[in-house]
Length: 244
Image 1 (cartoon, helix red, strand yellow):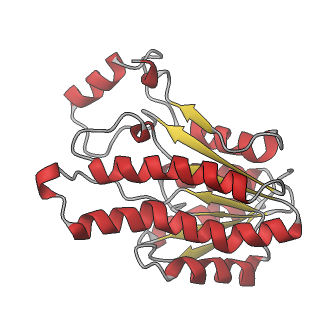
Image 2 (image 1 turned 120 degrees about the vertical axis):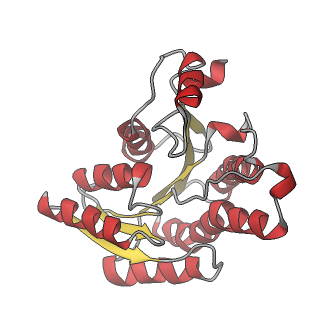
């Protein structure tokens, strides 16, 4: 699939990885729906930057912690930008949740944003892609799906679910729609990282450095534009971290 003239929805696109993905897809010629939850100023900056470079983008607000928001978001994007050809499920919650502090509310919020929303968006847009005869869905997982982080239990479980969702959707929407997953590792430092934490991560990463958001964007773009014969797979972008 060539990006030029296509419409892409990227969730969580106002900052960090989502921003890099949205900007890269726009650079390839796609019309980009920049979804955000609270980061309106940042989302507008992404849209303005894309437009300054001659691209087409619009910002869309939606709180994906509300299960009904996914359907409204999908409908709004289709109404304003046309049928969606590409869905990138990037939005996710990532916060420390020690096992003794994980309540039902925290569990449900993480699962709703990180797993249920991608499922609902994939249903709403993936079935339409299948009817039209083509489409790409790329989900963002994490190496935590297989190597759980201490004190991030709900997050790790949600990302393991994303990997399973990817494989299930790849079967359900084939052959018209290809569904794949990108699992970043140490790409961008954690906002709350201490120097000791950073040093420990680098010691256990064979390439000895953090990746960049553009590394993840390049993997996403490959799964959209680089091949139409890849589906149901997970591309790990971690500098070899999972080898440890």
